[in-house]
Length: 114
Image 1: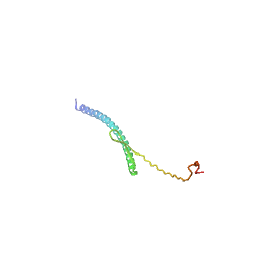
Image 2: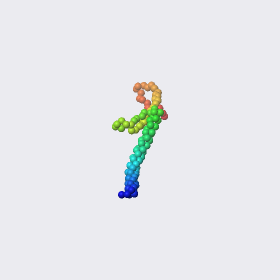
Image 3: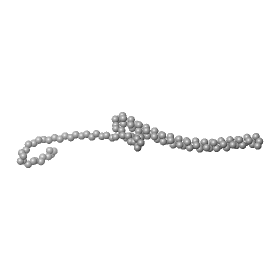
Image 4: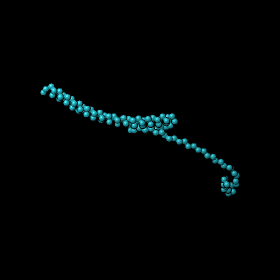
C-alpha cells in the first residue's frame, strides 16, 4: 500500500467513525432531552400546586381559620383544607298576663290576638 491509499483509508475511517459517533450521541441527547422535558413539566405542576397550597395556608392564617392537612400513608402532606365554622344565635320573648279566676269556673278560651 502506498501512502495515498493509507491517507484515503484514514480519512474514510475518520468520516465513518465521526458519523457513527454523531448518530449515537444524537440518539442519547434526544432521549435525555425528552426525559428532562417530562421531569420539568412534572416539577412545574408540583410548583403550581405548592404555590396554591401556600396561598391557602397564608389566607387561613391571616383570617385565623382552622386548617386541616390531608396526609398520605407515609405522613406526607398531600392536601390542605379549611374547616368551616358557623355560629348561629337566636333569641325569643315570651310574655304572659296573669288573671284571677275561681277554681270552680270553667276556663274561658280567649284569643289574645283578635
